Each structure stands twice: as structure tokens, then as C-alpha cells.
Length: 472
Image (cartoon, rainbow, N blue to C red; front, side, top):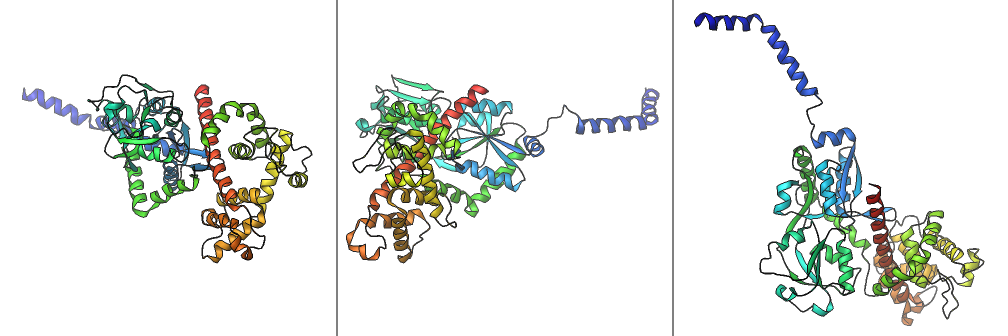
């Protein structure tokens, strides 16, 4: 037996160089083998692109003209810049499709203001928390005073499927609804619209998102808080994402400590209008009736003049409610309600011709915008141009001078806005170079257009997402 063991040992010694060679080959194969799967972070760095899946949301990703709103996207862009990468957004119409794309590797990160839940934690990894939100029950005016969820059991409800809201429903064991459904083919914004029209009685929604939607849609009420505040974060694949998570978590934590995240969140406020004056109920009605008749023309003219589609749609709605033959008692006419002198200056021959009216409106807006000092950047520059479009450039300048005299910033629309409203006051006429003017109406005008522009952006973004779904 000893001789046999010796012989085996002798064989190993004699073939030592062969075994070392084989070991070296195995080591090389393990490093360079195509069968060894690299991590998500390795693939992203090699690709140079971070694929960010999300749904349209002011908190996550929302295209508004040339600007992109949404602190999740902006945070990822900062992260990508720090690592020499670019962010490529991939939009989805619902969470189900987005989660499937994450699992298959079509995207690297899933966002869209996603709450950290137990079910999701079983299948995915979460980044460090970005924000916090609670889930509220949202209803309309008729049931605004109900404070007990059991009273909604016989009411008509609709929830977004594959959402934290649908997941919460399983935990509400005492709630036994008789007319509640879920759907993957509807967004929370559309559900809020259905509540506004009383087509349904209630839904569940993130408090942080509903707080935003209230700027656009009146008549909605957050009557019952259904959950304690929970963290929101972005999702990563369960496996091979540790390096990506480590890098992202460090960046998110640093962004909180330095104030970057708060700064990105505060930027959203600039895009939120004052809904008190905007009649969004009539707007949504006209969106169904009048808008389809002129949509193609508005988009065609906007594209021809490289003008923001949503802004042109919003101005034309504010001016004429999309009625091509509109005329006021003061004599302004057409889709863009041009005065005779403005039409002449913009070389518009027929104010009632919808194409000429749209073209003249774009030219007049740009004429006003060119008068605004170059140091003023958007969105303030465009908001000033809209005010000048309505009340006249001279009166806008009077308001900016009043703002400066008060020790405030004359280049910030939100600081000029209250002084523009004061132009109606006869007692300050002696301070105004161009005299009193209806500045209050100009303020309402600008705020309304801000509202309608964002609602048009919502519609355009939604339609583009549907087109992308069909192409895929």
C-alpha cells in the first residue's frame, strides 16, 4: 500500500509542470471565458450608457420642451456625469413592462417614484432611499368628508396594477370592497382625472405625487392616509448589481448631505402653476372636442418654426379655446387672437386663417422674447415673454422696475409677478413710465398657460410612450 501511495506521489512530482500548466490555463479561462458573466456595473462602464427605465412623472422623468423635469433623472444624470457616462431614458406605460425589462437586462435601473415594499424586495435590490411618501385614498367632492375606509366598500374604485397601492390592498384585511378593480393600462394621472369627472369614486396614490397633481386637477381630496410614510428608491436586478448599488448608494448619500438632492427637488416647483385661475375642467373637455381638429396643424407649424409643441398648443388654447374663428369685442381675432397692429407687424394678412394666425403668434412671442435681456434664462425669459405678449413689453418693464426698487430680483418671474399685478392700482400711476395696465390679467394669463402647457406635455408624453410600446 505504501509503495502504491509513493508511486502516485511520484507521478504527481514527475508531472508537476503539466499540472501547473493546466492550473494556469484554468485561471486564464476563468478570467477571459465568455461564459463568465460580468457585473451590471462592468457592462454599463463598457457600454458608456446607463439605461434608465421609468414612467412619465414630474418626480422621475417628464419632458417639457427642451427641458427634462424629474429629480430621479437629474440625479442619475449627475451620477453618470461623475463616471463619464450618459443616461438613456427608456419610457414604459406601466410597471409590469418596466419590471420585466429590468429582469431581462433591457434596462439597468428602474425608477418612477417606487416605494420600497416587501414583495419587491424579494425580487429586486433597492438603491439607498431617495425620498419618502405615504399612500393616501383619493376621492372626489361628494365623499371628501369620509374618514373611514370601510365606507368606501360599496363605492367604485380603480387601482394601478403592479403598484405599491395594489400590494397594500392585501394588507387591508378589514377592507372588503365590492366594486374595486386594478388595471395595468392606466396611469395614476388618468385615475385622478376619472375621479375629477366622478367616473370612479376613489383610488390609492402616493401622497407626494398627488400633491403635485393637485396643481393641475381640481376637485380631488386625500381623505385617508392608508400607510405610514415609506422610503422610495430605484430598483436594480437582484444579482450581479452589487457594484452598481455600491456606487449609486454612495452618490445618493452624498447628494443628500451636500443638499444636491433637495436642490433637484426644488427645481420642480418652478414648473408648477397656480391652478386657482385655470379652468382645467373646460380644458379637458376641449381636449376631446376641439383639439383633434387642429392638432396636426399646430404640430406642423410648431415643427416648421422649431417651436415647442406644447407651448403653442397652450397659448392657442388660452387665447381662443382652439376656436379658429374666435373674435373678441375688442377686435382681436383667430386662434392666437392677434390685434390688427400685431398682425400687420408680423406680416399676417388674414388673422382668421389658422395657419397664418399660429405663425403670427410664434413670431410675436419671439419678438417679445428678443426684447428680454440675454442674461435672463428660461423658464423666466419665456414667462416674461408671455406676460409681454399679453400686456405689452413697456408695462412688463414697469413691473420689473418696481420689483428692483423693492430690493427684489427683477430677473425672476416669481418675484416680478406680484408687482405686475399692482399695475392695476391708480395710486402708483405716477411711478409708471407706461401708465396703469391690467397686470392682474397678465399674471393669470401666464399662470394659465403654464398649466395648459404641462397638461399638453402630459398628453404628448403619453402618446409617445404608446408609440414606443407599439414599435417594441
